[in-house]
Length: 137
Image 1 (cartoon, rainbow, N blue to C red):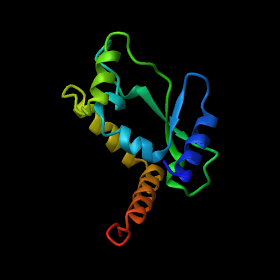
Image 2: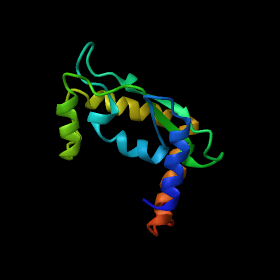
Image 3: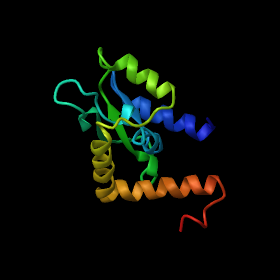
């Protein structure tokens, strides 16, 4: 991870309380593509989107797409935690019972105008890093 990435990680972690994790916008872009990380397990009422909540990372300057973060306040489930962790480490991403819910979370994130603009900024920054800035326009 480069200097910029370490700085963003430090800025988001400084805002987190004990037993919380706050991720920047680009980290969330990755997390939301993994059903094992994006929503809860099937315990209780089944998969739920309540695992993560929106947070604005105050220490990241206004206008930076990374500022639209997400907060995790939960731990791995005692029943499914080891299984889900192993799935993530193995590169698995899809849980059929959670797919519809994960798609609705993505849709809700993109329906929020501010978060949609910040997503676009992150995509443009990512494209610039890889020399694709003209393709993202």
